[in-house]
Structure formats: structure tokens, C-alpha cells
Image 1 (cartoon, rainbow, N blue to C red):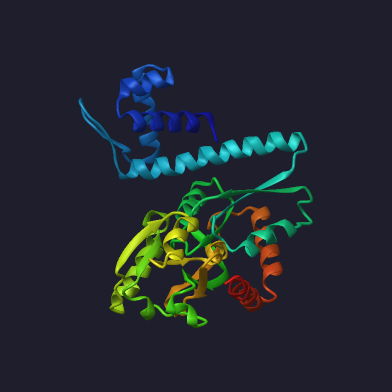
Image 2: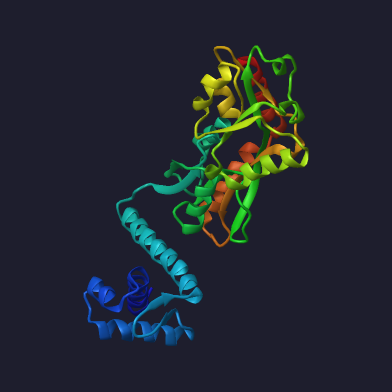
Length: 315
């Protein structure tokens, strides 16, 4: 990144944040005429206006928002490149930043411990935990190299590889008549109080559950919301509600009067993907994805079968 490019980006970001030439110039510790000149040169170089302005107002327009989105990524990548160079001088480990949902199948996470890349003998995997939609935001922002995400939103900016498919599980009181069978259907849950994950955690998946129920004319008696499976336990144990949970949630709840059954509903299979930016040309990321898939590929069906068996045992 050249000195001029850095100067232009700093000027545009300061003006976009303040929408005021004097305040932006003061923040950058330059004169207002100099800031005006920087913005004008940037717009002349790009051939488009980034800010709509008159004597009283400054407004960031569509082209400006597009420019700043990429400018922020460029700065982030430049900072990471600078840090990587410093670490290389110190002979530091190679870091791979991976995000995961807090309720990802534990088996998929345990696989990370066995990853060894011949070209990166000192690989250090740094794992952070966020909900799926937040993971995608961090992938697109360049803060993560790879994410293990359930039902990520579709985007042409992403590359996705499916690595697992599991059902929802329904947690219920052991006294409930639903516990008599090995599985439950969505129709059988009509007129029950449903406990669902809060919509903000995964809006598309939440809406899909409710739309599918509406299409089938399946009406819950009431809907309660949680952010962690443990919050559902008292109501489920008391027989007041049933809870929709993923496998890890099922394992947490299957105790002391609560049992779980897989939801037999083809339209509600939870697909988990490895996700990266489509324009990420990192050899490290490519090597990691290939190695991870090789380790995972032998018995996908066996993995699902073992997972289901474990949940049933705990139930």
C-alpha cells in the first residue's frame, strides 16, 4: 500500500466517521484545506464521488460505503501482514484463526487437535467462539481465516464445504408421552410450549423453523426463547415445555428427568460447513481445508450414527 493510498484511506475514513471536514481534519491533525484536497484527489483518482456535500452537510453515498468497506479490509490485511512479518523474524508459530459456533458438534472441533500440515510444522490454531451469523461477518471482515458454521447465510463472497448434517433434537420430560418413541415428528409438537434459540442468534434458521411449522399448520401453544440450552432445563424437567436443541445441547440436557429424541423432519436438517472468503488465496487455508476434509471423509455416516447413539444412551 503506497503512502498516498494510506493518506487517502485515512482521510476518507475520518470524514465518513465525523461527516464534518473541520472535525475530520482535527482528528487527523492536518488542515481543513489539506483534507479537502485529499478527498478531491481520491475522488479524481477513482472517477466517482464518495461524499455528497454542500456548504452545510456531508453525506457518505453508496460508492463511498463500498470504498470504505474494502478500505477497512485492506488496512486490516496490511496490519496482519505487518504482524506476520514481525512474528516470522522472531521465528514465531504460523497462526490459523478459526471461528466456531459454541454449539458445534464436539467431534468436529476435536478434529482440529489432530491437524498436522507438513508445510507448516509450527502451526498454531487459534479458536474463537461466536454464533454462525457473527462468524460469517468476521470471515468477510478478514478477522478469521476459516469458520465452522451451521447453516451459514449464502453469499458469492464465501466458499463453503459441507462437513456434517445432523437433526435437531427435542428435549422433553421423561414423563411426556413423546418419550415413548425413538424419534418425534414436527406434527407431534403441535400445541406444546416450544423453547427456541433467540432469533438474533441465527435469524434465517429461526425463521425457517417457524415458516415450516406454519406451512404444515402446526401451532405451538407458546414460544419461549433462550440463548443457552441450560436455560431450558427447569421448564423441560417440569413438563411445561419442550426444547429444540442441537446435539451438544441434547447432551447437556439429557439428565435428571429430561430425555431427548431426534426430530424426524427432513426439512430441518442442520448442515455444518467449513467457510472461508472466496478470494482467500492463502496456501495455509487451502492446505488446512484439504487435510481436515481427508481426516473427516472416511465415515460421515458413522459419525452421525455414533452421535445419535451417544445421545440415546444419555437419554
